[in-house]
Length: 88
Image (cartoon, rainbow, N blue to C red):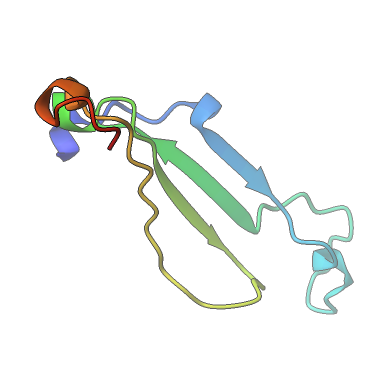
């Protein structure tokens, strides 16, 4: 799968900084724009995963520690034919 993944471009990346980061007493540069949160959207270029985004999120000072995967299924090609017109 990794070989079918194109390189990530800047258009697929979101960086941010959590509110209050510079209020931390250990941060000496109060004008810092250091990212503390990132989202990266990737795609896998093969027929099975065509058009399905894979989203990675990471950050500091988030409300909870977790790992999750979300999958949003799309209608299968020819599903109506395969299931006699029944919506799946």
